[in-house]
Length: 116
Length: 114
Image (cartoon, rainbow over all chains, first blue to last red; front, side, top):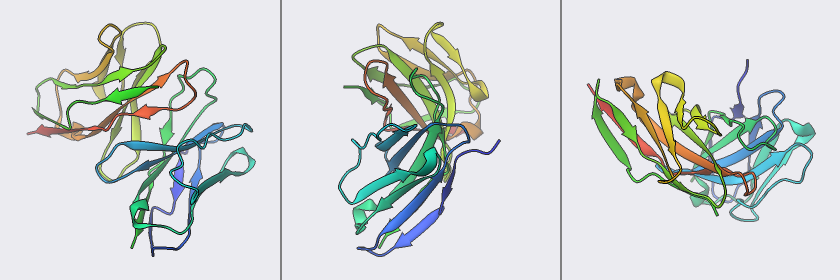
């Protein structure tokens, strides 16, 4: 079946502009995660959605970052007034319900963001 | 709080030799442990996980990992490395008693030399 998809695959923007990154999770997956991966670095957790519950926003680095998930499916990560340090690969992952804790996350290919 | 360490930034191994990529973790409760692999310009692919039961877990592409509670380790192993195994490997942990977040290690770059 179809995996997690993300768009765009690459985004170049100018400092100060807003950007929107999109994630389409695997159908039926109720949990959705956003991560940031800077060049040569590990994954930094940003935000987590589970069903209709309030999202866990504890990883968002500043109030310029926000995310929403419409209808429990597609998610959009928005970065306002982008800065050069926002340049990174933004990865989305989805999984089945996480009440048990051991569910596997499936990752999309990522969006490579470059802020000039 | 939970944390993951991958003490080696880079591991080099000759093709055909066994490989080990190390991972240690710290959690307050019982851990769920995962290994992912990332090939160039690709997202992360799931390799294997430990939830409960047998300490030796077998996963994709001939990889396996052993959960060692006393040493808080979950090292990734493969008996015979292939050049195509060259990639970036991430260990991740989720504490059963601590929220829903995964914590990923910094990654280890594996190079298999022909």
